[in-house]
Structures are given as C-alpha cells and as structure tokens.
Image 1 (cartoon, rainbow, N blue to C red):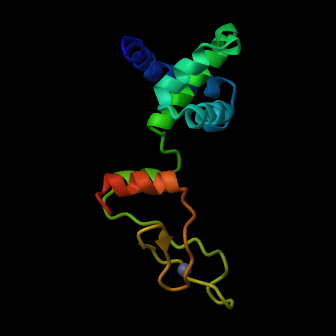
Image 2: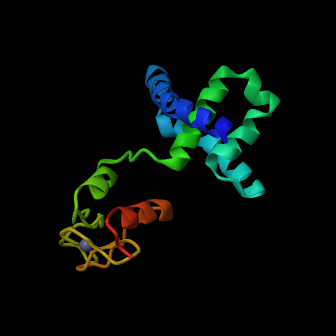
Length: 154
Ligand SMILES: [Zn+2]
C-alpha cells in the first residue's frame, strides 16, 4: 500500500514531463503514449489488476528498469488510464459545459440527397444524434461513460 501511494505521487509529475517531452519532440502526446497504454491494459486484463498495481508489475521487468524514458512514459500512461486528458475541443466542452452538444457531423451538402444543415445534436443515452438526418457521433465508450458520470446521466 505504501508502495502504491509513493507511486501515485510520482505519476502526476510524470504526466507533465511526458507532455513536455512530446512537445520538444514535436510528437502527439497521446500517440506517443499509445504503446505503453496498450501494454498496461494487457497487464491489467491478464492479472485482473487496477492501474497502479499493473504499473508495479511492469516496473518489475528488466525492460522497464533499463529505460528512464520508458519509465516516464509508463507512468504517464498510467495517469491517462486513471484520468484521461480530454484532448479535443468538443470533448472539453462536453465535459465542462452543462448541456453542451456537438453539431451534426453529416458532411453531405444540405442541398444534396441525404444532406443536412448540421444542427446541434441530442444525446440519446449512448451517443449524440442528429434529429434531422439521423447522423450519430462515434465517441468511444469510455468517454461516454465519463460524460454520463460527470452530468449524472443514467
Ligand atoms: Zn444532421
């Protein structure tokens, strides 16, 4: 338990460091973390563990111990699994503005068959849906789960 607390304290500092590292290398932060996130998820699934215990398992491996950069990215990846950075503006708005909804994403011209003038969408309990043309957003389930939790939507 003490080990876990110590680890948690380091994690948030690592997320900031990883973001800086991505910026310096002109790389997309989440793209850079992706392989580390994948490994952590596999360890979590295989051992039925939560994020930090999974990181502790990974931290016991030789690969982890031999790479400072790898350690930093594994720690940042752990934070992203616990508390994801909301990257896109739409996602940020959805998580921060009560009642916000994105515009319909149908890109067929409004005058063409099947087209739409892209009004704001309505949340249907699973995704955002356009009432005019039936377009449905494609947010990943984990995001929708956080969205519903944030606004107490059941
Ligand atoms: Zn539409």
